[in-house]
Amino acid sequence: MNGLEPCRPDVPSATAGIYLHIPFCQRRCIYCDFFSSTDSGKKAEYVDALCRELVLRKGYLNGRTIATVYFGGGTPSQLAATDFQRIFDTIHTHFTVCPSAEITLEANPDDLTEAYLKSLSSLPFNRLSMGIQTFHEETLRLLRRRHTAAQAIAAFHRCRQAGFHNLSIDLMYGLPGETQERWEADLQQALELQPEHISAYHLIYEEGTALWQLREQHRVSEADEELSLSLFKQLIHRLRENGYEQYEISNFCRPGFPSRHNSSYWDGTPYLGCGAAAHSFDGTSRQWNVASIDGYIQGIRKGVPDTEREELDLATRYNDCIVTAMRTRRGISLSRLRQEFGKELADYCLKMARQHLEQGTLEISNDRLRLTEEGIFVSDGIMSDMMFVNEE
Image (tube, rainbow, N blue to C red):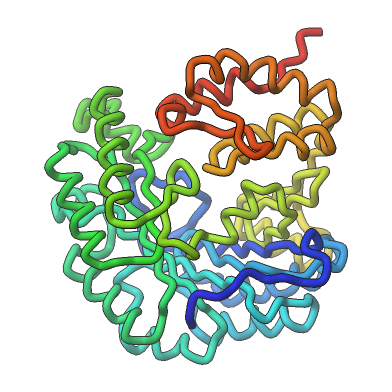
């Protein structure tokens, strides 16, 4: 279960990922707008459908070697080891999986009991991602998280004792009532755990969520822009001084431990998404499954998955590249721009980047266009400027 070297097949470009959406939750957090359900009554049928979809769509990736497998949700740790074993058996039967593939399980801390971790020991998971969000007890209750701070800390240590050496934790900032002092306490506690990876996201008030309604009722207040920027700077400073690399705007890792699965999204690597509401990308089109457990299961049973598909024209693929690759500290290769999108769009990109290069928020180094440290704080505006807009 150690951190593993990246998959290196004979043809490095011929790799892909598999994402498996597990939509079941014991209860719904007030900020979440991902597709999920608190009704676990159809869990067995869902796992059946998930395995069947993997078989039905085994040709989607054109024989690429699977370099990453990611179980997301929802709460994937609501599945039993026997469920995971069925899914892994299906994957290994119908796909070629790299021996050093990164295989991640998202988990809630309170699910990671000693017995549950023991049940996972025979499975190929080599990375766990824990949704902690905060160590502030009152805020955990407000968010309707199922764990306490003490439970999260204890679960992390149990994962270490179980042999996991590639652990990621999720944190959120800009939470209701957030102060720099409270955020510092969260960061200090996270650093004491010494995870290999930390994802830190600013809270977003998504329309239709319980959190959105609380704000509309003036029961909670959104963090203002000045505080949000201060919290973000605090995050970057504290993690950097403790040896973490900010390899993407919201993601930090110890050297050698980036999320290879998420990095493949930002690099434009194809992936197959299975499960209700899961998205797939084959390089030239996007496809997504129906956001309904019943609708998903019924479609798979009929052998005709309920999906939608979007063919991506050159300009759309260019824009997708800008909003993914430019989030990373590596930025985008200018050679890649020219090869994939042609001279016209490559020239357009550099033209739109010019003012930011002059302002010092973008830089070109070793044939790569990327954000500078100052540019990270205004990245949304920079990427917006670089997007192609057809004015015809």
